Picture 1 (cartoon, rainbow, N blue to C red):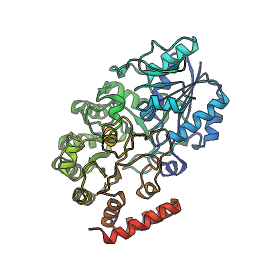
Picture 2 (cartoon, rainbow, N blue to C red):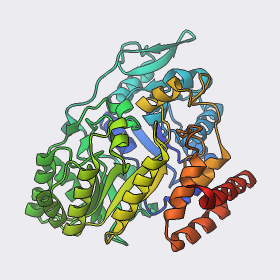
Picture 3 (cartoon, rainbow, N blue to C red):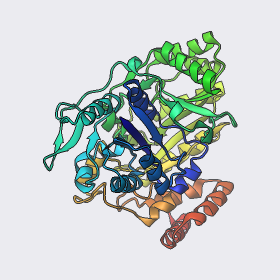
Picture 4 (cartoon, rainbow, N blue to C red):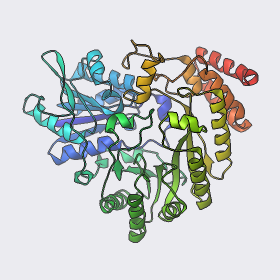
Length: 476
C-alpha cells in the first residue's frame, strides 16, 4: 500500500533559524525503512522538501495517493501539524495516524478534539505502523495491535502497551534515500562547512529529569545497538552519500562507557576519518574518555548543565552536581573539544538567588575557549513530571488543553516556543529572569539580540521588551 510519513516544523521563522542545524528526521527514516522492507511504497514529506508550506505539504501528500498517512509532531509544531491533518482529510480518505512526543502523551484528548485522526501510536513506531498497515490493507480490526489508540463504534479504544524494541540491531538502515538530502544545509557543530547526517547508536535514557519528554516516550528504557553495525552504517553513509560529518542522535552517548569506548576504538581501527558531535552528561565523562573521543573525531559536545544551584538540580532529579559539571567542563576544555553547556531557568521553587547562581556559572563556563552557554526558560511538555506538578500547583489551569491555542506575547520576547506554557510563579516573573540574564550578557550579544527581536516582535511583544528593559535597571 502507499504510505506517506510527515514531519511539520513549528513555523517559517523557526525553519530559517534552524537552516544550519535541521536534519532528516531519524524516527521517520527508521519507520519508512521498516515499512519498505515489508513491501509498502513509502514517501516522506518533510519541512525541507516542502519549504514547510502547508499547501505544498498537502499537495505532496495527496499526489502520492496514500492509503495511510502518518504524522510525527513535537508540542511546538502541534498546531501546524493539525492544520495539515485537517487539510489532508478534506482531500483524501486515507487512514491518518499520529505519534511522537506530542500526540502520544495527549492521545485521547487529541483524538477527541481532532476527528480527522484515526489512530495514535504510543512510543516507538516501526512495528506498530507495520501492523496497522497490514490491518488497514486487509480491512481488519485494530483491536489486537498493542500500543495504540484507535476509534471503534464512536469510542476511543486504547490497547495495552507494546513495550520497547530491545533488539535495535533488527532494524534496517534508516531510509535517508527518501529525503532530498541536497536541500539540507545542516553543518557539523565545531567544524564549519562540513555537511552532517544524523545516526543513532542507542535509544532511551535511564535518567529521570522532571522536565524531559523522553521519559514519557520511552519510560527510562536505555537500549544500544551493536557498535559494529553502527559503524557499518556510518561507513555506508560516508561511501554512498559522501558524508564525513555525523551528529550522534543518542539522548546521551556516554551513558554506557563501554559502548562509546567500543565505538571510538572501532572508528580508529577502521580508519573511518569522520568528525562527529554528540550529547553527553557531565557525570559520565572523564579525561581518558574525552581524549579517546577527540582522537576518534569528536569535534563538539553538548552538555545539559541546567542550573547553577545544587538545590535546583536535586529538585529537577537531574542526578548531577555543580562540582561534576565544573569538572566535566574543565576536562572538556583541557582536552580541546568545543562544547555547549545548556542552562535552564524558571523552575519549580526557584528563587532569584538560584538564578544568580546559574548566571554566575554560565559566565564562568563561557570564559573557556570554544564554549557556548545558551539558556532557555522551562517549557512544560505533556507526559512529563513537571506537567503533573504544574496542574497540582495551579501553574496550568485544570481546563488547560494541549490541543487548543495557547499563546502569550511575552514568550516571543523570552525566545521560547510561543505555543507552549512556561513554568512561572508570581514570586519569580519570567520578565525579571530575562532582565537579570540580559543584564549579565556582554554588549555585542545585547545589540545582536535587540535587533533580532525587533525584527520578529508584535506590538504586544515590543511592550514586553520595554518592560524587560526597565527591569534591567531596577531589579536587584
